[in-house]
Image (cartoon, rainbow, N blue to C red; front, side, top):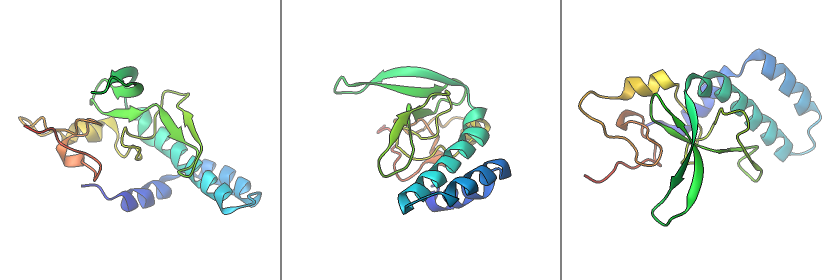
Length: 150
């Protein structure tokens, strides 16, 4: 299982210096803790888009759940994982739709944590178990994932 806090540390250490410089300037004009959280979240999202999401082959898809509710998602045509069509400006309130076809959150409303090749490397031959919600293989499950009942 992947630890969310370890991933946050990992992604924070990957923020490109160009983005860091731009965001430092923004941080100087922040009036509240919420403004700082927004800047930090934006840096994480930009980093995830640049390093992880861009490695996938995203297609927009429409899915229908068991209650008939239709929603739009992103699906990687190569590794079969699914991401949300929404991305957060921060975890506290503001949510917007993905505009650049590079989603940053899984269907579980957690950060996308793997490149396409990393997901493909998690697949064990002969074992096609994966989360029925987000599609991540068994080796990459998070606390929000659930394997289908067999």
